[in-house]
Image (cartoon, rainbow, N blue to C red; front, side):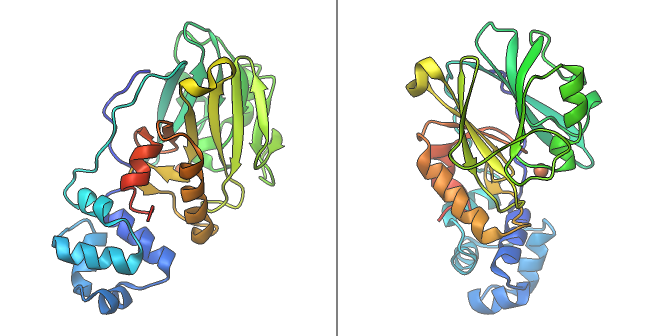
Length: 281
Ligand SMILES: [Fe+2]
């Protein structure tokens, strides 16, 4: 697996803003409950940080956030784990979209030229530009959720690469693909893919646990879409409560060493996010 330095998707200000939105509190209400100056909370949302450890602790309590992770973010020292060896290859494909970057992933057997694609990025051109040379064909595409930056090129990709199967979350409104929902599993080539239905960021959202059929215990990859990021979570645009429930449920369900491959930002592990993710309490 090639690992480059990848910045976190969210800073402290993003996490506080999401947590406020999720809790339904205004900065003034959070200030009243935490005893932290409202101006300091607003400044933090604008990426100007002047919060002491004590103030962060009070905010974490009011916003129901993991204090250790929140303080680490505030110091720009959110811990990222060593990514262990998986029994297969993973290519994180990072594609610029607007002011951000969206991730897709190819998974293939070591030395293999055929793989699986998880999400497709904003369009075919962006994907082709960073396509790994050794991958000649795709056996199946799996979408975490339908959103331009992750799935914009779905039909073009299916056509261009002659992909025989495309899967989308059950109840998703997608231009092509077959629905997959909670608890379903697919076997494609040497891989077994287990589905977690994880609505929250959007009404239809899946995470995919990827393992080698013949070496299920040797390591797993969780393609987490916009449910779990290293050090944060996706916006709860459909329902934050559900997002938070699924975030915890999925992290508890997978082996601790599972590599988390999110829709934005760097890789992490289930163990690391259970310990430090601000939204895991
Ligand atoms: Fe996204």
